[in-house]
Image 1: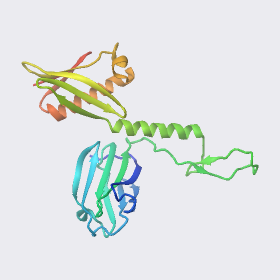
Image 2 (image 1 turned 45 degrees about the vertical axis):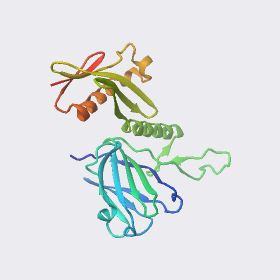
Image 3 (image 1 turned 60 degrees about the vertical axis):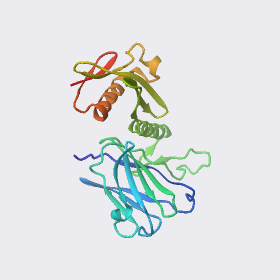
Image 4 (image 1 turned 135 degrees about the horizontal axis):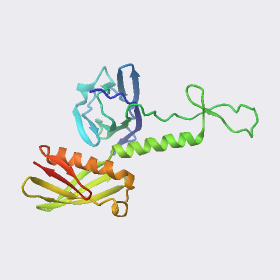
Length: 251
């Protein structure tokens, strides 16, 4: 399946004791009709002791191996990203000196317009007191508020793409933990009986905001995400039933 959303490169940095000594990756996203690529350049020849690379999607490992197997020439790495689904991605590369190169990027949903960088233009009136005019690549004037809104929307997408579900077991019961950015929801679960494999207690609409800290308008999407993720991780052969205050999984 192809995903035609644009890619935004979010962060390039190094970690480890030698972070300041190993140089930074360079990366560029290239989009053609019916094709797209992520191009990454190493700061030095890739055959000199580089270790493993690891590519994560939504914090789940989707590809790894010796870096030399990914080289396209001496310093270039290529990924065909058309098959990458919408979401948050992280690339890690082990440097010979022991540090890590890190690259983080977001694949936007198809049709979502990436934020435009603000480029200063000359003051049109020639007066030092005149406000500066900012234009996009097509020469259209951009308002500052529009840029702020685009940046906020992108940050919201990144947070949403980074959400995850974790589990804490206490025998026949435990907690399902939903995390989105700095916020989390703890849902009590128990194993069931008969055709019910397990059920989760979910705050109803009247108590949702007070008990979770999330808006009521977010409830349906979050509950559905938790249900689908738990089924994928823990009960892949089960069907889901969602009520006003529970999620249950049945054979």
